[in-house]
Amino acid sequence: MADTEMPCPFCGSHDIIKPLSQNDAPFVECLDCGAIGPLSENPGTPTQAWNRRAAPSVDVNGDQTCPFCGEPKGEVVEATKWSREWIICGSESCGAFGPDGGITEWNKRHAASA
Ligand SMILES: [Zn+2]
Ligand SMILES: [Zn+2]
Image (cartoon, rainbow, N blue to C red; front, side, top):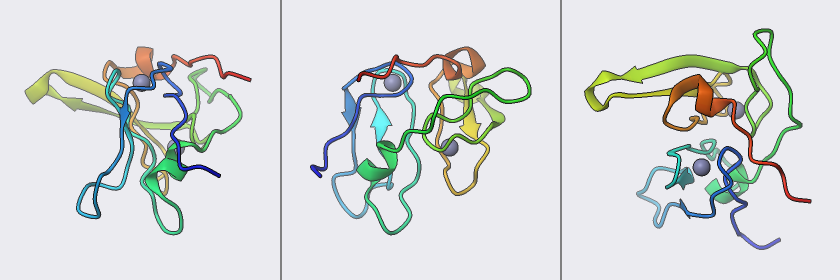
């Protein structure tokens, strides 16, 4: 299987950045919406972690579950310093970040291409 990134599960962008070296943080990031893919823990590359897709589902609040691992969302992280707000995945072993823009953006899902 080629080590090629799938489009962003939130916005569908192909404009994504992946770690270039061992020293970079081990995740893939979407340059359009700011979403960050799951941390790659061995084995597997950041690209493989990014390419994980869970079946679409909703949590008890009716919000989308993590598009990567399928776990319910975690807390809302506010970074007032940058006036940013985003949702992190509730699964510690995943660690994905939703797009900049909080729950509204988190609940967006790019229609999966067949
Ligand atoms: Zn995106
Ligand atoms: Zn997750």
